[in-house]
Length: 449
Ligand SMILES: NC(=O)c1ccc[n+]([C@@H]2O[C@H](COP(=O)([O-])OP(=O)(O)OC[C@H]3O[C@@H](n4cnc5c(N)ncnc54)[C@H](OP(=O)(O)O)[C@@H]3O)[C@@H](O)[C@H]2O)c1
Image (cartoon, rainbow, N blue to C red):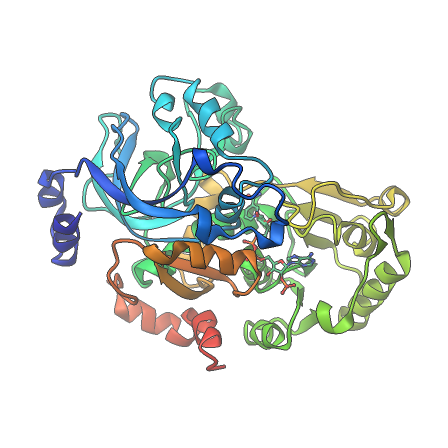
């Protein structure tokens, strides 16, 4: 891979890159099937991704006709990297085995190592014989919707495809590696004003938030809507806040520390709830919720914006869902894409039906939605929320930081990129959009706000 990196850094064209040999093995971050039970009996919070994520050489898989080999310059940690590395709620080898039974090409994925990572920025090295719109040398970012587009179920909304998967989570050969195997219909142009790491953090989280709030399949936010956002400086929440502001809405952001309050205000979100300072206890014991606490939150929100929120952006799950259903406005929407604190959710249905609210599910994004979101980032209307970047060898440490809720926004991982700050090919555009805006989360992490 060194020869490939040197060529990329020297600005080699597509023809030159296309003639460089693809190495028979490459460096990657993966979990091992034999470790599946290594955390048995340990509490979730104590399961340590540093113990399960390995970085070493793996064999290069063959390329299918609809795929490309990508030289990965940077990738990012997503919460699904945490799930895979702690083998919760199930081992992701079950996904690989299922994919292995689907087709001859799918068989490549069912291995005893799972290369993780659902984001990437990089350079196309080779394209399969069926790839039409991309060529060696293209600088790209990757979205993680992995599907078989010869299945009719993929042709209305591709998130409804029966074999829809999240690349690098439900499939192998993901982005936390020096080389990745990516379907051509996962590629999008890299915003040229961003560094490799800044452009690697957006694909999964930003597209998810776009579908939840903006796309036609979930909450469909209108100008003027007020939107209550949990985890407002986290991966999906921080893009959610920006989309609300960019779309003419009023965000109410929830965070859990004074430092996060400061960051949220610096993003332009004026209505902030510090859930730790307010000490909300929505559950009085393991089985009983406290409606008084829902009411206290509702009152707080009304005090801030003078109304109940039309949309609640929900993902913490069991700990907050009852409150989310309660505080949504009459006729409002609770849009959910996750359940970090527990999947078995509970709400008081009287508050839902009597006030004609609706709960809408959302999951990642189809190609068009991911493309639209990438375009907003390219236009400089939405900024990457990268707070820090790690070297690939420290991927376990990075995943642990996300698992412990210790980082804001997104953590990037440098794969082939030898240092931070490389990859900007349109510095004038970067200046026009504003270095300060682009690097807000990085400056906050360095204590510079
Ligand atoms: N379905 C999809 O396509 C999709 C896509 C992306 C992510 N997800 C899922 O969405 C969830 C969030 O992902 P993320 O990348 O935003 O994670 P993240 O970067 O860790 O941010 C989540 C934030 O949620 C808040 N939070 C966590 N536990 C909470 C609790 N019990 N009560 C209230 N707030 C809580 C925390 O913020 P404060 O402590 O500051 O409040 C945390 O920073 C994960 O479960 C992830 O797997 C799903």
